Length: 444
Length: 91
Image 1 (spheres, chains in turn yellow, purple):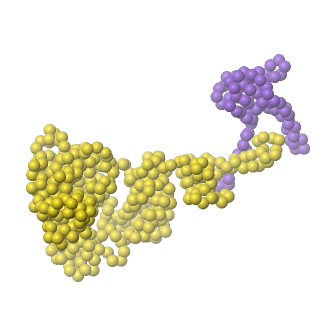
Image 2 (cartoon, each protein chain N blue to C red):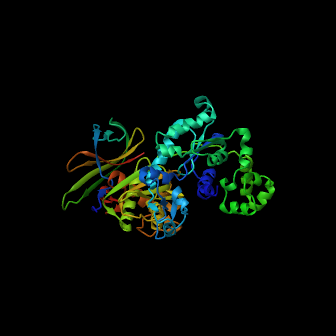
Image 3 (tube, each protein chain N blue to C red):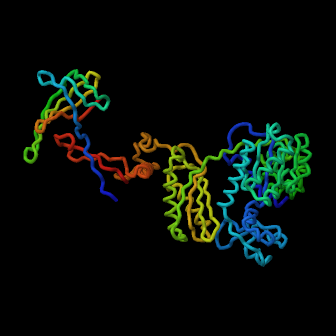
């Protein structure tokens, strides 16, 4: 169970805390958790079946000189290789270890294909990281029959998008609420789903490890030091004592452990991403070239009609690498924006931390999460002194506000020229009216 | 980068003016709103410009008229080449 805790606590917590865009509503109380452990590594093994019987490890997506392992095969684990180990350590433990570069674009494509299939079975599908899904099963008994039949039906559907070995490795747990379903899935063996009835939830949870709780690592460590190993041992403490020790998290942990807290599965809103791509004639390894390609792609993506009226909350940059594989960075912005510079800056910073490991053959930008409509009033807002000040600073004569500059750039992308003009004096005292003023094209 | 484009502001546009017996405008077709003649309710002001006699003489007879729909137009009659033009609209 410690393994489960180390690798899956964070995405589960995110799913709980509503970091993903879930739709409001009551959701589904009956939850089916589908879990494909080491999803990414298994996808690689499906792609290269010859590696299946060897010691294989997937490298971490974090670049740099001291790369670590992300996921390891069972055979590699038998040799003492562990996720998080440095490559040098792992190779010294297992000299025959095959190291694989991650291909995030491939994993995301598989995840999307899975979501499409699952969405045909139930309207309530909530992904919780790659290779893990919660399905709302309320009201599906008439369609699919008893709970075992419901699970069987879902597992059978997976064959449409996943190869047999991957479906066979899938674990399934059906229980009231997401936590119960998750714990059931971690207890399940491949092909043998664990189904927990409403009345048996607290008894089922009592014997399970606290490692499945979606709480901070430090909380789990302290609980273990206090001798609390199972959820049943945790519920022996009264809520005030746990809140006193761990704050609100302690109270939540107890509510999950007793089965009192039932988190409904909520349908996940997945806005269609805006995607633009660029193929390089020659693979590009230079950072400057990638940055200028990024700028062009961001401009194109922002100018796309399906983006209009929405600010961008998250952007993903995907590169196809020379010799196969892919590289990806994702940035979630604190404040949604529709300005290219505001998007490019954090993406460049992230690219600096995790640069592509090989030259890039093609680069794509995806705007995949959106915010409220971008404000247009800032251009000529009276409160903003008719656009003559920016960030509290008065603009110098001839200086153009950022917002206006961006607006002109967008219009040029759409129309091919700037349709804005500045009124200039030509001969203001002329008796002939059309000689007094003229319009000068405005192109800052 | 292309050179900045300059467009004159307030360029006159052609108009069709129906004149009365005394040579006064009684109806104008100049609207962006309608192609039908708009009756003139009153002529408010008149003035004349003669200029640029040293290169290409220019002679215009301006008037501000109020139409029956309440709009106010600034018209002129080009005395050198003929024709009526609108060079301002309010209301």
